Amino acid sequence: MWTQIVGKIRMAHTPMLNHWWQVTLYLTPRGLTTSSIPDRHDAFDMEFEFSEHVLRLGTGNGMSANVNLSPKPVVEFHGETSDAMNRLGIETAPSGRCRTRSNRPYRSPRTTCMPLMTAKPSGCSGIN
Image (cartoon, rainbow, N blue to C red):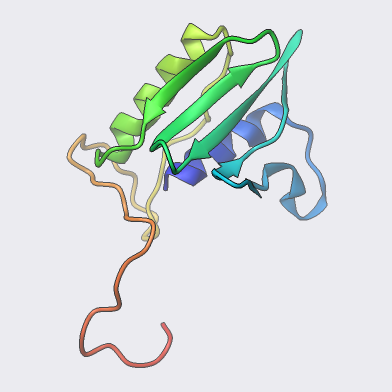
């Protein structure tokens, strides 16, 4: 769900392209990146650096901020990412309420993030 937050931030800043190509995350040797995102008079990027366990936000003028990728509720990750953007002078937050797969809005700070990879529960068969 953390990648969805980054994707919605990118979607809020970039013009629509067919098939949502403007929100793609690109593979790097260290993780995933958004590439350059326009913002008023500058540009910024967001990179999940899995080797350092951080989301790194960088601006075109050399400023940067990090958000630690430690186990935490999705709501907390969203707040820390918004705070980092504000410190860098990047204006925006994804509009609308965040929703889970069941389409229920989550509001509780106790909502936990989903791990990047999960083991298939025993007793499961086939593809869901």
